Image 1: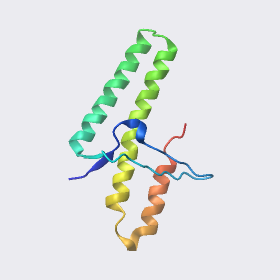
Image 2: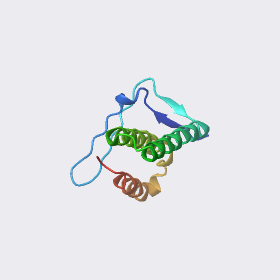
Image 3: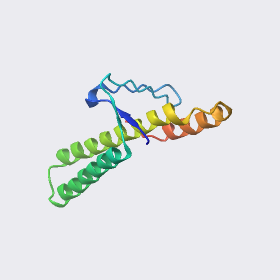
Length: 117
């Protein structure tokens, strides 16, 4: 089973980015719990529902600031999922010392592609 670690509540995530390249440190609360693949899929389904809701808001010509607020909520949910995946990767996939440099480069490339706000 693959485990994903998320902090609850969300406001306990702390992300730090370095100069010139992305360096992400994720500090999670002591009440963090591992998430199974089915839990991850449930979170992704919720995000999918949020995106459909944003589409309906646009179709209904809702107030622009409300739409932007919901888009930011979707992005935050996806960021939380992505950081959980990075956390899992660091804890469970980077264990082969013979491939450490290659895996570290691969990880930093993936983290560098994460959008910054």
